Length: 242
Image 1 (cartoon, rainbow, N blue to C red):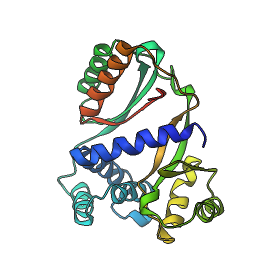
Image 2: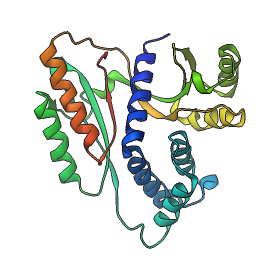
Image 3: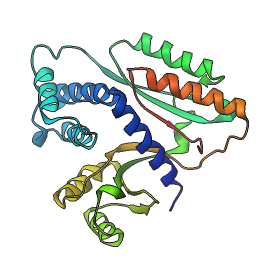
Image 4: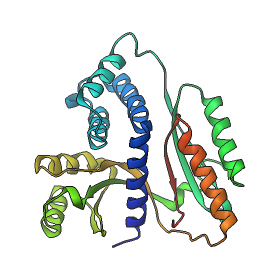
């Protein structure tokens, strides 16, 4: 399998952990609020909302929780103005890190992100300083334990639906698309009854970096832990080969 698999597994494990902590529901709730504000409360007429709802279902968010979130965002209570911000920087030994956040207070979020980098002996850089090392892709992860379809059959289904690449790992399948085709491929898999662990547009590193120094590993893990604990942080991408 290609180098993408390492990122797929990292992301898969992280999201399972986040779901256990409940943070993923907070993340998705904010994404629902922004999507409804931008395109309305009907997923059939709001592509972005449809993607967020698919992400919610993949993370086992109850349907009534999703519906409440949509109604709240569409009503008078949905007046909190969240905005997306992205930070880029370096961890120990030049590890590239991208942080996506959704916040109602950019000053607070910027301070928290900078603090996370500093405590891990890293630093926040300028926009574009590391993003060129990543490819923006639609990524769908399927847990083998939850899927009965054979790999070859699933690969053909995905490719026929418009996927770019299909990779098999020991415990999962990874399907890659151009960002614009992610929802189309996801719908095709859903129609075929295939359960998905995640389906979203993400950033995949072109190359991975090994860390052999124990202090550097501890420092990087500290940065990642602090970012994961921040409710404003939606996603963290890095090129560390864990």
